[in-house]
Image (cartoon, rainbow, N blue to C red):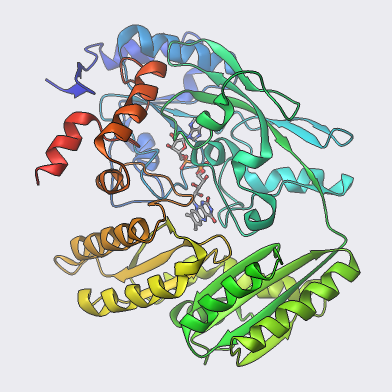
Length: 480
Ligand SMILES: Cc1cc2nc3c(=O)[nH]c(=O)nc-3n(C[C@H](O)[C@H](O)[C@H](O)COP(=O)(O)OP(=O)(O)OC[C@H]3O[C@@H](n4cnc5c(N)ncnc54)[C@H](O)[C@@H]3O)c2cc1C
């Protein structure tokens, strides 16, 4: 018998279930045939695939509420999906469950420039918010590299980060209020439009909970005034350790750049070949350091950062002269992932966070592991906040290479924990990092995380088998 978190899976007939959904959701958006369901089999981590029983696309909070009630009544598991760009298998369907796709909840409901807030539905794309606020001189700060495609609902569920999060904070620092549909179909509000809430901080609990505690159907985000000036420094180094140390040096000197990114030689060459951004392809490492603010603040920041890069041995330093050049420098960085896809048939994108002081140590160790495993690694990441993204290059068609890449990735995550960091920065745990949760947490800590899940979802119907390993799975893993 199929069990969901130890409970028997629903025995309700799929046809009967689809008919019930069609009584309150436009029948065209209750998808049951295999070919139409295929695009929903996986998220951005396509090594995991599963076919859901049904794909259901509600168009309002009320339809989500009714969908959750129906699934709860019949004990049907639910996996929520935003844009499906997640990289840890968070939106991987459950074979006995319904995939609740929220792409039809895609309206910006209201922009309040005076309050610097926007109220949006979860299917709105991240970049759309800043585009819609541009006419008021405002922007939404968290900017994942996938921002052209990923949804704000997915950003909330993963606590997404991006280039500008070093200075302006992650999703959790830029969301004020959520409308949440609970597993049994109640609609609740979490957080409020002010800066303080009474009681424990449930907003922070929900943000980053990977679709396991409720379905987000509305989000109020904070908007920030667009800085009047912005320039980016490109600094090349002939070894990656010096670049890592320069990152620590700049931040220790009291400067918080608006963005502070690092690329290694594989990433530089691939990005340059793809985007023609003018990168120094002889460099072992490249830093992109963006300063924003008033003209005076930017000029002073550039002066201080340039001196710091010289002190740490930069081999060349360039500063963007105008907006077009600034956009070009960022274009290379933002297209680095697809660019890497051109130099390797497959790559596995890891995501871990480390204290900045350990950057050069961890980068050296990754290089050593690369030799040990016989697989190339490209590093392109948010260096300022220590959020690493080693891309392990492999060829899935070669027997055993995927397994080797996964084992290498696991070692990198364990290394992050060893130096006092964390197994995820922004991509979440999903199905990918369940074993590493046991490296990060002991049994007592995992029991607390499971207790939170049980309190919100006693039958384990929301995104089962993701995020937090059950205590039974912990025992299985630990005995391996
Ligand atoms: C090329 C590339 C670059 C990327 N760069 C970044 C980056 O710089 N920073 C970053 O943070 N991430 C990055 N990502 C990862 C991904 O884009 C983010 O995790 C993003 O937040 C996922 O949003 P989504 O709408 O695609 O969510 P999905 O992949 O659809 O879902 C992700 C998780 O959120 C849950 N979920 C989705 N919507 C809701 C909702 N409304 N209510 C409850 N749960 C929900 C799902 O169940 C799932 O667990 C990148 C991905 C790619 C492919």
